[in-house]
Image (cartoon, rainbow, N blue to C red):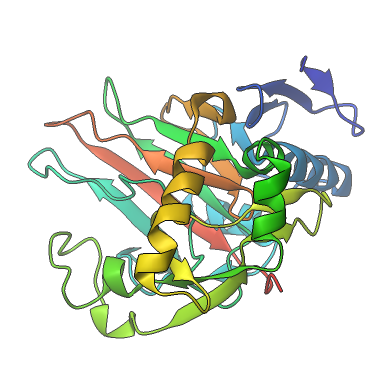
Length: 282
C-alpha cells in the first residue's frame, strides 16, 4: 500500500504496516478540522484501524476539542484523570515504577455494553528508548481464519468483563487506576462483528477483557480463546508505533488490539488518552 493523497487534496496517508496502521500528514489538530478532513480521517480509520499524527502541539482543551469532532467522550471510570480535565485519562509510568498500564494485548472498553468507538492517545513525555505501542488488525486476523473456524464462530458471543482487571483484588497500580467498586459489570458481544463503517468482518475477542464464550464455562472456553489469541497476535497482522513527543494516535477499538511495551525501566512515560463513545455491537 503506497502513500496517497485523500479527497480533501491536503491529507497524505502513509502506511505503517502491511495490514494495519497509517500516518496522516498535512493536518494540524490544534484547529477545527474541515468536513473533508474529518471524512478522510474517518475513512482511513475505518480501513486501517489506526491513524497517527506527528508533531502536534495540543493543549488539553484542544485535545478534547478534536476528539469531540469524532463523537462524544467516554469518561473513564477507572483511570486517574488530568487535573481539571475528567475527559482525559492519564496513562503514566514514573521512573520508580516497574509495571506499566496496558502491558498486555487488549481492546479498550470492550467490557462496556456500548464499547468505545476509538481512543486518542497523545504523547506528552516519552522515554529516550522504548515504550512503543504495537497494534494488531482484527480484519486481517479474521480473514486469515480457516473456513471451518469461521463457521464455528458464526453466531457465537463472548463475555467481556472489567472485574479481573480493575476490581477490588487488584492493587498493583494504585494512584494510576482506582475505583474498583465500579468494576461490577459484564457485557456480551458477538465474537465476529461487521464493522459499521467499513462493512468488513473483524474478530472481536481480546486477551485483556474477554473471559469466556457466552453460554460456555471458563474451562470450555479457554482452548478456543487461546487459539484465537495466538492467531490474532501473529506478526503479519501487526504494526509498531514508535512514539515521539507530540504524536497522537487514534485507533479503532472495534477492529484492533494494542499492547504497550514495558521496556523502559527507570524512565518516564506520560500519555493523555481520550476515549470516543461507541454503539452496541449487536
